[in-house]
Length: 162
Image 1 (tube, rainbow, N blue to C red):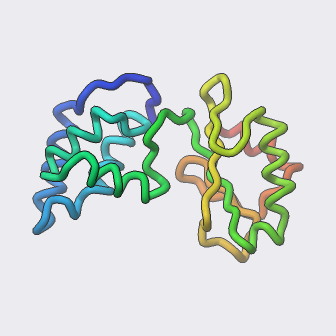
Image 2: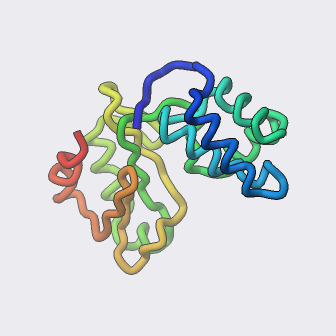
Image 3: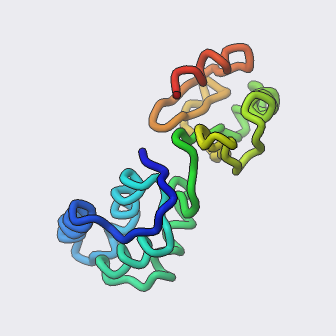
């Protein structure tokens, strides 16, 4: 995933992918989240300019699309690191060591929840549930789910993500 901090509009491949996706829906707006994910996979986040272009393609107002984008917590409306770490803060994870793990991330990465490391490598974000309560505490790095995570394994885990 690229995290280049530009605000260019969509490329031809993105326009075609979003348009093709939108044709699958009776109402084009039904494709809004997946259309944003297509763009996010290319750029790492959704700038205001990209959001306006997707809204135009889906026949939505930018405000309507922004409402959907900001409701869905996996659409990033500002730049993120090369790797996004989602740390589950559900009840199960809290009981099984969330606070210790969160604090270890803060110490190891030098960032708080919602922040990106100075080298742009990681963004640390909370998430309500990753659906693996039987293996708490759970985190997701990019698309990889990691469960039964503890502070002692944190460095080895992070080394997998250059």
